[in-house]
Length: 301
Image (cartoon, rainbow, N blue to C red):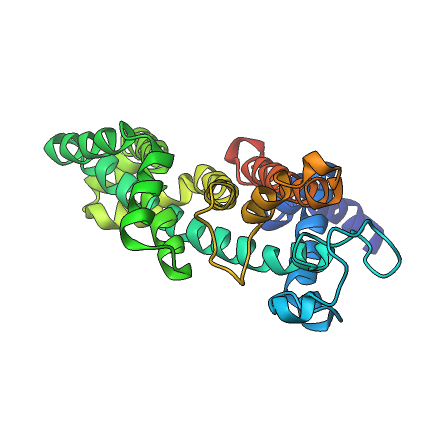
């Protein structure tokens, strides 16, 4: 009798639905480039926040760094050489990465939160509200972004808090348009209309239908926003408007290194450029994998 029960129970166990979180994890981990990117970003983040406090060379006090040879080639004492001020390049990369990653992630979070809220409200309510809100976004998008950042930083300064705020609160316009498109589509679907017919209010539909079904694009845009924030911060640093000395960021290091590369000091440019490019590319790969993981059409029913 037990054999008969087992024979019928086995098919039932095989047809048991796989939890959604497990399906998403399986889709994400199937992307080998994304896994390698996660490992790289995590290791670099840990190194940036830990190593500068353990590294034997001071990376902010130029008086102490003056005892080191300037523009020294890579050696056992300085794995990536030293820069024009005598700072150890490897330590400086990790020290600057602490600021670049922190500002990038915080500005990216601000960007996606503001863009998601703005886009959902505009797309879901529609009508005059949508028209006015989107025309404001269009007017903002008509201004060259780098020119806007340069203008605001020139007027108000370039403190760390202001850099985070200015990149975060001016980088959400494109995100809002993407999320608005999702809201316009989802509010017309049958399950949203059924909720309306059952008496659900608009905020309930946004919370239970629009937001959960937009999560794929939200997560993707969030990761790209972080990469864009790091990219724009580095662009400002390269133009000489990044983090103020003695702190530094990757863009500022690139700007200072380009002044020395004509003298053959390649170690002041290429290592930081490789680290910076790999971070941006890795975050984009992670975003692609998260988009696939949250894509409802790839999940089993």
